[in-house]
Every structure is written in C-alpha cells, then in structure tokens.
Image (cartoon, rainbow over all chains, first blue to last red):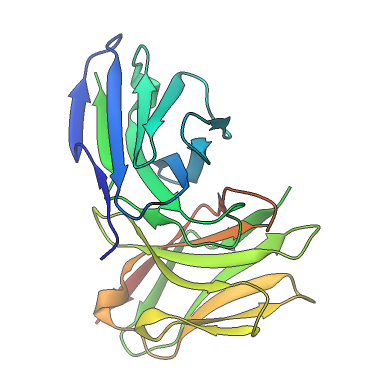
Length: 115
Length: 113
C-alpha cells in the first residue's frame, strides 16, 4: 500500500519561530510537492522537487524554503513563522518525468497554527 | 497556463439523487484532468483521471466523468448519492510537459437524508 506520511497532524508555533514540516514517501517517487490549503482558495503549490537536491518554486514560495537531501524525504521550512502562514499543509509525491500525467499521492496533512 | 474552474463552492443533494459537480478547464495544449476527493481531516485521494484515452472515465465509488473538448469541461457525476459521498471535491489539470497540478478551489458536497 502506497504511503506518504507527514511528521505531525497538528502543530502550534509562535510568531518568529523556525518551523520544519517533514514528509516521507515509500514509493520511490521522483517528484514531491508541498501545497497549502485554505478555505475557498483550494490547493496552492508552494514548492516541488523532481529529483534529490533539486527544487522549483511554485505559485506561493515567499516565506518558505525546502530541502530534499534524500529521495524519500522532502522538508518544508518556515524560516520565521507568521500568523498568515496558519494553514493546512499537504505533501504529495508522484512518479514519472515529467509528471504531468501521473497521479499524485497525498499525505494526511499538517494543520499549522501560528500564534 | 492551464487552469480549472469549479462552478459552485457548495452543492447539496438528497441521498439517492444524481450528483453533478462541474469543472471547466483552460489549456492551450491537450490536458490531463483529475478529480480528487478529500474526506474530513484527511489528505486527497484520486477518484479518476483523464489522460487522452477514452473520453468517459470511470473512477472509484461509482463516480465517472466525461471529457468534452468542445465544451472544455470535465464534469463529475454519480447516479445515486450516498451519505458517505459527503466530502470536498477538487478538479485538477496538468500538461504532459509539466510537473505540477493546478487545482480548482473545490466543491463541498453535502448529502441530506
């Protein structure tokens, strides 16, 4: 059974803290993605990676960075958390190069609250 | 750039009634189209996808969608709604040369007894 796991389901952080969200997939997928989901806005792509150590900006990269040191792990970093980064964060992975026609598999999400 | 528009942020149907969730796409090249479902407090799960084979695509849980190029649509249907179908539904589009999906804003389906 394919699996994408995220390190936390719920997270509460204070403004200005550095926040790490971890994602691990066990499907040997080349591509990994970070989205944020907000009511009425759907899913918006923050960053994606199509190979180890490779990263591409998505639609809303400001205030975020990512790291992919191993194929199975993709980390999202909030350098200095702000209240407007309170959201649901979803990680996904897919196979294929390029990945346009392939299904993305999603983790359960991390609900981050920044106070 | 490719995009999708989901018509109706909330749809309510009675149990046993037809489910119709609308999605229109915009793409200058042949698109790949997807429908995902999200149950409360869960990630997204693929319902079905269109990748230029048959225009009528059957998915899981009795859902299907028809690709209509002339209407630039990919509407999701199910003949008879079940209470367990209550969820958020997302349409998404991509192209073969790309990596990422572009998602619609979602439609919340409510099923009433």
